[in-house]
Image (cartoon, rainbow, N blue to C red):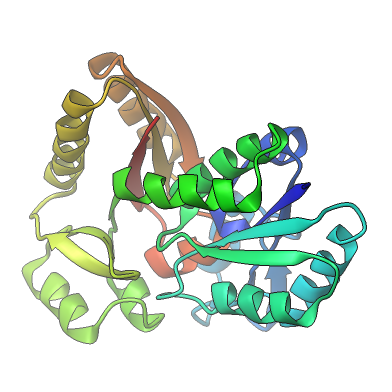
Length: 280
């Protein structure tokens, strides 16, 4: 059985990773002042933040049309027996449901949609694991079992400078945004039951980043080896400095740098930072 791996652009896997592991990507789009851009295709993350700074309207994000999934699955049916389609949390986007519906509309190939219940490079961890296993000849059911096991050991926390982006985009409740604004806090956020909620309310950015590191440290003590990622919203120098400090402190953790692209950046805003990890 040949198994294809599909994901969406919010996994922010690199072009090199996608080419090396034969990962197929369907982009979400961002609408800036009436102009639609497919992320990772029509616009880079840095271009997005530059455009948004001068935009009069808050950008909007759009999930892929079902037809794009159907077209890709039909094309894959020529060379593959089955597909695993891995997507950002169904609690913040309809992309996963789009893959489910498209899978029912194609013939000649079995489609298994997987809800990562998270997003960004941490979603990308699932994609990389699945693609590596597919390359080694594992079946879709074997890969899905591995991803379900992996889900127990995945963690991600992020810190935003301004909760208004999440509140305006409907990804965080008005009450939570109001509390954050009134107290001038830099809350540590995470995913619970597929949606974004505050983990802890912390007064300063420095302390919030330190709290995320403390949570990483707890797991770094438990496991022999982990993969981790520092994610930034257009603040690469700060992210790189944090990554280097973390890598020196936790030698059993393999760190990489990633970013919040246009779609996720719309909801988190410039200056956001994230830290995610998974047990190897």
